[in-house]
Image 1 (cartoon, helix red, strand yellow):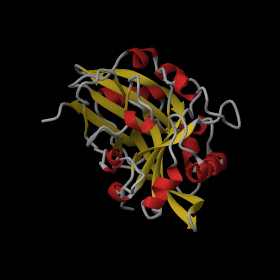
Image 2: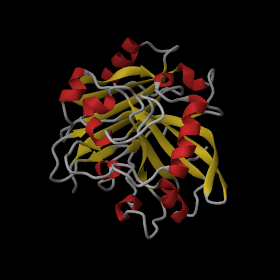
Image 3: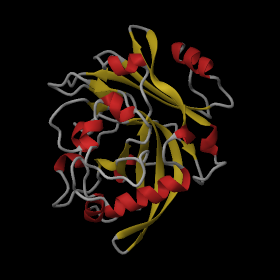
Length: 282
């Protein structure tokens, strides 16, 4: 199945792994955000909208995904890998509301983020131009998001490769350990896509989607894992490689994934891998 990201509205989920926002220093941004449960995600945020309307920020119309590189943003210093599992959904609409989401494929994603003060919206830290995001081209099929589905087997690992050495960057985590997953995640996403207000760091997603002529397919990066101590304290530099791996934990051990990362030997039919070099704009 061919997925053309340029035609797909793309989003991320903030706060779907307990502890990540605190590590990223972004928990203060959400102090006024009310959630149904303490461990609920905080918001859906846009990273790319294929058709920009009058109320949609213009920068969201810039296609930010690149399979092979991240362009370091000018004037910034603190850039971090956001290792995630991303899922592409087919979308059903009734009038101006989303009524159903059907998973199609999943894969490794880097929802790369700038750590900076003063950004009023999450999206301002996410799409700073071309090559500011990544979704693996070797994505995998998924036909449902219920307990017992293929994603139960999968884990998320991430690494920073610097001067030929491989450093674990995010905690190796099971996909099913997201705070919200399965049908609960889908119900929450539908609610946020329809009802999220333009408040604090959040935006009115339903307005953006309707201005984009109600796209029938979206990509959602489900949430970033917690960082290792190394990942929390080491920011990306030009010349580094950012590596995100979504792999079946019943086939490969965590140790084998690390060894394969060290040998650059992760190309397998059941592994989704994204490797991006950090570069400067020509």
